[in-house]
View (cartoon, rainbow, N blue to C red):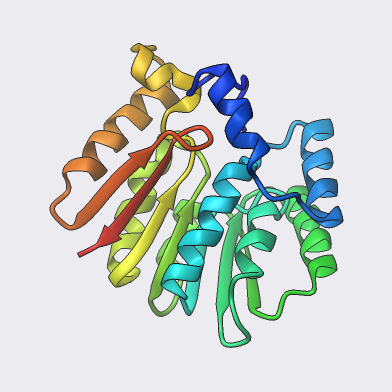
Length: 213
């Protein structure tokens, strides 16, 4: 989540756009409260709303998420999948994964949810079949490697959504550190990769959307 309301947009713009978001239900509010109290990074509500729009437009059958965390985005995305849909998600921390499973169980999703425990770079090569939607929100220095592993498993026309691409404004401000440098290189890559059609939006902490050609 963003550290400041004005990390990307001007503060007045950010608060105005927040006022237009639909209210969250009791479960999502509890997940947000848990994340705040326990320092767990989850997708911003505006990113969740963007995901709903994209999922309703795409209607994917098989979705892969890199970075389960406490299950907030699993619930958001899973609610948009029908009974025939499958959502697979990857989390390295067992305790965090247990929390996610609890929240997701409460959601009573119709789709099939498959939890993978392990490092994403180890799990991705073992994934079977192909996917038509991917959400990347995990270790920032590994985004490029996630993309390398996922691209052979993504169908033509698949949607890729990547969170935190502006990294609190640091990417554009020229800050130099491991995560910021990696995200800056990743942004340049997806913006110029001939296999992708990409846009990066100032939504949340910077959201990239790419379509596999």
